[in-house]
Length: 239
Image 1 (cartoon, helix red, strand yellow):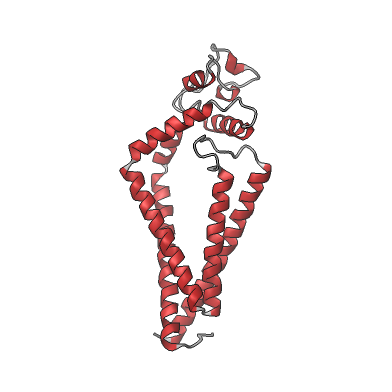
Image 2: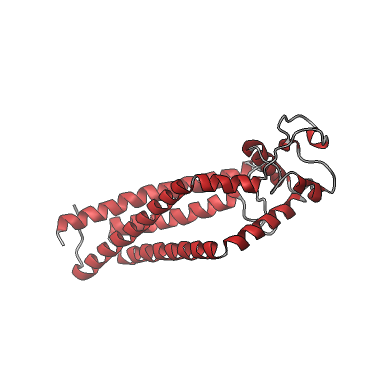
């Protein structure tokens, strides 16, 4: 393979992973900021108390940052160990994504049923003192998405053991409006609204997923190509 082509692959891999690493640092910073200062970004699931927006962003940012660091340093230093580690990490991430995707489609109905049940159980924690984050999260979601409860406003009746709903369920919200059954509440459940949004944007989400897949495959191909050339020739490919 021509020397210029290998140099091009090397610096493309470096620049790609440099931006990748910077993006991971940004995500990690946002996640830490949310966990410290934004209680509204809390988990809605009582079964998975650590599954909050902040923790998910911190985890994603950490993975992206470590992966980008391995690829960036491996490319610029032409280190076989780092390049191989970068390839293996990308391969593990890709396999994990494929396994999760397959399991999701195979057990779609069961996942949806369990998610609804778990979210309904979480409604009962709305009025407890140590779950202010969950309360803020539901108020934000219901106000922004114009929805009420998981499948409808009656979910709140069962969860709170009374004929009342949060004020964020009111179409014309004011203090205490959720206690008056004569007020008009949002009729659609939030789970249904999320499902509708996903269905409306499935082509966009599919395009994003394909772009991520292509980027992963290119990163794996470039790192393994550079690794093989260094392993075979033992030369440095400086510009």
